[in-house]
Length: 543
Image (cartoon, one colour):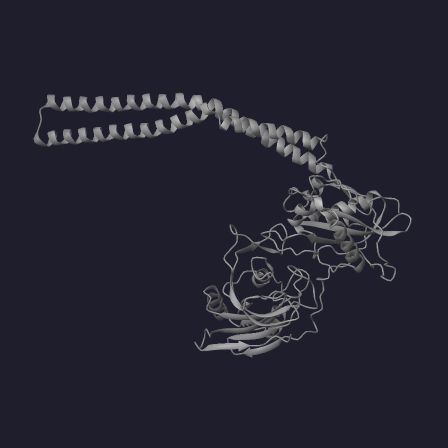
């Protein structure tokens, strides 16, 4: 292998079988060879102290297992974005397009746009412009005061004239009053015109600056859009069949229509592009995190993560054409053999014990669900059945309504927090406090669904009470009492550094994969909407 960017494995990997198909990048368990490659990249990064501070803040890296033109197997490495102010570092594949190249059109045009920004800033902070703004604001307030005073004087004069008319006046006196009224109205119009003229004079002086600023902002907008368009056109992405599409063509077929910022700069598109350009055959991939978790997202040092949806999914849909890609492991998950235990039933409602791996309602990739099963068992039920949902990976108690009226009543009870829930979980790590409350607002990560993120501005209130049930072998058994019902609330509150910083075992989104997600809805307690009786259902976890 003569290519300097192909890495040989430092340790013997002869006993590890090659992957049977290329990794499905949006849901995967990294192949052992990929894990070995990632371990070697992490070891190499520790030898670069000059990158330590930047890496500590967090960055995504990727490895691509490849077979070269001579039949040798090795791996390529890449980082998302840039590193240490550069896109080019020995041992890592280059970007699809190096927008940091000082002689490239991007840096040159960026310099021109920066010059426009400086001109805008100079105009907006010009002393004459600021003086005119203050003068105009003060004058506007003064004009309003003068006109308001003149109107009040006209009103008083009108009242006096009305009083004189009530006492009785001669025709000559009436004519004089009319003349007085006409004169005051004319005076007010002259005053209004004079003040308006003063305002227009100031506006004209201000417009000299404002027109320049608006023209520069318009020029900046046009040039920025043109630069972005030209930049996206430079990202000409290949696939395994040798077909090429630029980012504009790729995203034209998507709902967003245009590429988002940073598209094409993630690790996997870089790796695949380099492999195709050099006729290497991609065998498997993995993307992993180095450094601290971002404030809003949840990332753990050394953990592997799926490719992002917003930026990478449309690109990879094109780039993977021609490769034998493993099927989506979520498609066609076998749940038919799992039983749906009915814990309680009366003429109004049902409580079931949902097995892990079963959907609450039918999804895009599978129709088997709690709803599907119950609809078959109770074909005459008039209600929408499912009152609330559990994540597919979560097991436990699920409340079902047989009638529309009971469904509506139970949903209102959930909304007003009159249904108490308890979950049991095993966490990967030791929670040092025995009990407490987690209050972290949550909202969807729209760029990377189905992930949720903690966000102080856009997040909705999410509150969880917890109590530690036991600690063993570096793990914590815990009871969660959610006081709100946000998507992935318990998973995020457990994994986030500002929460418990201990992800639920088996959480593929916010932690590490295991044989299952160790989260179970153990208890429901509420007032029966038909009988008014307080009822509690308990089904403890079998883990």
